Image (cartoon, rainbow, N blue to C red):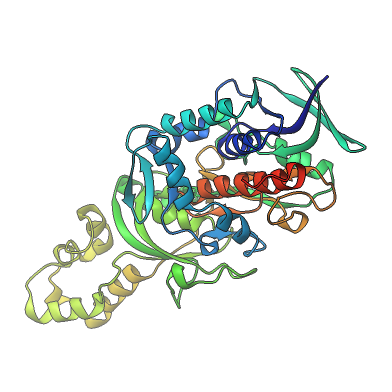
Length: 416
């Protein structure tokens, strides 16, 4: 039997950073993963450059049944704290879009930083190690693994969510939570492309590859800025302004990935294809002042193929020949394209999982089970899901450090 102070299951972003901090506090730590390679999700993220955080992070950027739960961890380890660590380790980075931060070189830089930090902290690493069972015996935890029996005073579950099973994602963490009586908020794919019934989408398949900036909302009316919306329980109405991509199966692009986390099956989405332009007024003025056709007029705001599609049978008609009612109808349809997705492309295409271990059963600083002392859950396996743009990585870092600091103080009296 191998004995440790802490056994961490999952060698991804949260697990590795937590292990490094606990090792520095003088705790004996073993870090396990069923995969043979470290942190595959980090490696493939951000097109290989890892969108590791965002400059503007608050609880407003996360979805959870308890929207306040993440605040304590987010304040424990901020983007500024992360950047200080990365700078000390010589990792160059840049801001790409709306506060999203990426490595200048490669996501491997982040993996190497975490790996070195664990090695320097004396963390034992068991890769390609399957955890076959976990049980609690008095004040200790016993883990039967493919690498042998482990006894530890604490177990930290950092196994991530169900997204991207092709790189090793499993339901182990959720299964373990249920085993010990913790509630699990029903998981579902998030930050994922949306699909439509083939008959419904047939008229749009020829537009595959068209991209444009849009406003997308879960509401038909009353659009409000996402930055001012409160993510209260039961308040799912959200609005994002980003680029959208039409595909052969449906819709993708940042706008759709963002709204997918809030969309509920059976509900419509409202898409403004011409945001920040009072199209009705423009078309009516053009009727009196221009000899343009409907299609050529729409091409001022829409990609050519999309303008042709939306103009339809009116494409070659001049604005002057159109009735006011028909021009108003075109404008209204473009400002409020109401669509009903039939589903998503699932976990294979999802960036993250929404849902997870219910925060009602966890301490907000130590992320320890309130029913089973010594059992902790961190990162994506917890019911805290971030927006697109580095927020999910920041939750991984923050929850890992908050958990490690709480354990270090409780078990060693050490302040990290």
